Structure formats: structure tokens, C-alpha cells
Image (tube, rainbow over all chains, first blue to last red; front, side, top):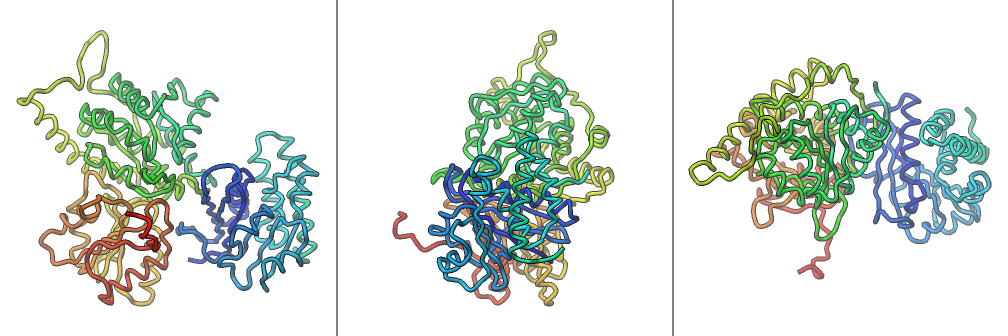
Length: 191
Length: 391
């Protein structure tokens, strides 16, 4: 079976790590891929570390074991870097994207890795746009901006479907686009 | 219509399309969102004239669907883990009273220790109640099997509760593409429920009443016969389902690459596709391995299993439940189906309480069995080494 991309999301309960993976599952399907997302909570409580997974493939996905060697890791909360082995199993040519206010160089030093890592201050962007520090859509935008695995338009459509409140949906679309544009510039890929 | 949906939505939508008259439920992870979705449909007026009742406990929920079914309603409930254990007193009654209630079990481990995660100990624990049990490998299969469950349960040759067992989290919480049924298709397959007898003030009957020794045994044995008939009815309905939807889920078991296999892995539930994947890769390397998926666990398809495994010398059973102090449950049943054949059975207990079952683990076990490295006796795979703190 050919899995094109495997992603692991780290968040804290209530930050929407599960929704992030789900959003991308729906968006990826819009792009014509087969997708699968599933969660792995700690204690189902706000604030406890949460992991969720995403698989994207051009064939039906039948394997449901946990993602052990992700292509990409997304970290929603800077405080997780100290308490969770966020790099675990990340492929050598993989990439880690974290919500981290001190910049990519500082993040790389802290993680002590040669692998590609990018920091984005998602808390700041989310607070500016949503008025609340909910970072999941920003981090979805950052991942798509850094990697181009799924079309940003599909992500935007998925967000419009996910949020019943139109105003909140539109704010999240703006947020996802801002984070996307930022990371695309940092990573410098062309469509 | 093919859509990316969460497992619990696929299940709730299939329940809606089956037009239940009464749904009663009590929330428990990982089942909660199934009935949350149904409650939302109810609040939005999408459940026709169905009654939705939030019970005060699973005992209450089971009692309500029992009562509703006895009064002639098509009744549905869903639960998990301790919730099912709390229902069990009522469910034995529902089966004995021959009420065709449909339940979805979002399979979860049982306490203690407390765990919300997946194994199949909960539904396995009430396998002897007289309830049909079917285990699904995907959300598509779960979605498809719900109208079928009502149809089989309500068949006059059957009249037993039907339990669709869906792995909690692994399936219920996964977002994935599902071909959602439409009302026309389901209506074509599933007629309205027409009970043989029901509680009716104008034609009073009593149900589930006292049976002294001269009568009791006949009722219990009648359930055995009903289960045997259920086996045939299910096969017919599986075929009709295939004709109607083009989706062939097979019979009570699905044997893949078994004819010439030296080693066959027996699996149930969401681990099946992963085993299939391992088998197909090992086949590419020329290894003679196969897989047997058990779909129907009650009635247990002994004949089909014996037929599928007659050539396999070595059989691995992936066990995600225990019968503490005895052979693990699926192994015990498989061994009894193979009685007298010259085959070795390797029970592998793994994945309890949501522990991941990686592909590599399944492949390694198969390799070890092929090389004769392990003995055909109960073993626990993926255990951590902290026995010193556990008595």
C-alpha cells in the first residue's frame, strides 16, 4: 500500500489537534486523495497532551495502527516541546513545524536536531485574528504552507463546512491563509 | 454519496435511515457521539416520529428499549464497556423475550484499571446472552450492517437482539471516506417492523414471565434453534445486501489466501485490514500465509471456519480479549471448530486497552510461527516490563 504522507499532531486537550487532523482529512479528500485521521488522547481532559494522526494516500487506506515514522510533525503548543518527545520517529527527510514564539533557530537548538524544523508564532496570529489563542487552524495553514500536501482552497472549504457559525468560520479561513502565506514564504516553494 | 465522515456519524446516519421508533441511550466514551448525533437529528426533526430518550443509566436505556420493543417498536441503543456490563442483566432478558433490539457496541476495554481505549472485552463478555454479534473492519461495514442488523433481528425465524461491534476510537473516531446510503436504498431492503406479538392493551399478553422447571428449558433451547436459523438468514441477507449495494462483505467469515497457506492469521474487527496488508506483502515475498476474518461471532460459524482452515497447519489467533484463567475466547471457539484436525493453534493476546498493534508485530509473530520459534500456547505480545509493581 502506498501511503503518500503521514502526519502526527501534538496538542493539548481543547486546542483542537484532533480537529486539525480531521480538517485535513476532509480537505485531502476534496483534492481526490484517500484520507484517514484518528486521535489518541491521554486522559480526555483539557490541557493534557493529545496526539492525532493523518494518513493521505492515492489508494484506500486500510491500516489503522499508529503513525510511527511520520513525514511531518505538527506541534500546537510550545510547552509540549519540553514534555513530549515530539521528534520521535520523524523521518530523516521529514519536517517538524511548531507553534513556538522564539523562532526556528532557537527551536532547532532546543530540540538538538539536524532535521528540518520551522517555528511559527501561531498563538500570536490566532489571538490577533480570533481573539483567542486557539492554534489548530493556524497550524493546519502552517503545515499546508510549508509542505503543499493539500490545496489551501480545499482547507478553506473544509473550514467553512466545519464551523457552523459563519463569522467564526471566516475568521478561521483568514487565520489559515495568514499562516499558510507565512510558511510558504519561509519554505519558498512555488505552486 | 461518498463523504469523509467520522465513524460515529456513519453509524448514526445508518440508524436514522433504518427508521427506528425508539432510541434510548446513556452516554459513555467512545460511544457517546453516536447517540449525540442521533439526539441532534432528533432535535432537528430528522428522525420522523421516533422517540429519543436520554436515560438515567445504561440499565435504564436497556430497559427502555426492551419495553419499547415489547410494545412493537423498532428500538436502538448503543453503549460501551461498563455501560454494556450494566445493561447485561436487561439484555439477557431481551434475548430471552426474543426482542429484536439492535445495539451498536463501540468496543472498549473494561475496568479496572480504568481505560477508555479499545479492545473487545466488553461485547465478548456477553457472548452467551443469546445476542447475535457481528464485528466490522471499517466504518463502511459498520454503516452497511446496521440496516441488515434490523432486518435479521426482526426476521420471524430469528427474533433475537443484534449487536454490531465497532472498535472504539479506531473506527468510531476515525475520519474517512464512507459511501453513505440513501433512504430509497434502505427502504428497498428494510421493511417496517411487523411484530408477531406485542404488548397491547386491547389484546393483553404477558412477556418474560415465570417459567417453572417443566417449561423453562424449552424456551432457552428455542433460542439455540433461533440462533441456528439466524445463521442461514444472515447469509441470505448478506447476499441481498451485495446485490443491492454492490458491496460484498462476504459470509460469516472471509477467507483470504487460505487454500495453500501454511500459516493463517485469524482476526476480528478493525485489525483485519492491517493483517490483510501484512499477508499481502508476505505473499509477494512468496510466503504461504493467509488470513481468516471472523465477522459473525454469535452464531459462531464453526463449519465455515473448519472448512477455511482445514489445510492450514498453523493458525494464529489475534486475541483482543481474555477469559481470565482459561483459553482466550476466540481461540477456544476456533479450537473447538477444528477439533480432530491436526492443526496447531497459536493464541496471541495483544492490543488490550488500546495498545497499538503495529504491522511489524503481526509480521514478526507470523515469521516466528513459520520458523517454529514459538510454541502453540497462549502468549502475550507487546507487554511492558513492570510486573514488579503488579501482584
